[in-house]
Length: 138
Image 1: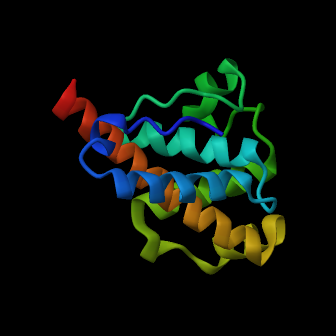
Image 2: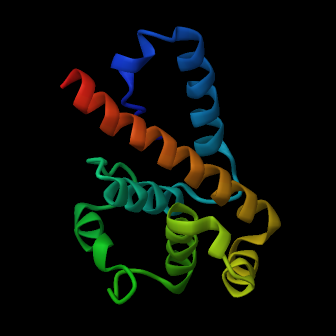
């Protein structure tokens, strides 16, 4: 499970920090979507929101190739489904189409769709908070 790097903010809201840590752990400890898929989504969302995510479940060369995931041979069709979904949720959830949802359902099932949606929202929120913390606290 990647570290949640929000310590400067947690000092102001320890109760929130504990609750967020529990949610973070639950996302990583579930058994529906594998950690490497979640990690790809977390890293890509981090790149897109201007965070500096550290790769913990994927090799460094995968992190380097992540901006080119649609065409890079290092990503499987299953990876591409998850990354397409993650980017669509980040950029414009209202534009998520039936085909994209069907692809996620085919690859990950209904439970996987829920886990990916929840996890991607969590990854966006926490990484935007990391960017803000870096600005506020250096």
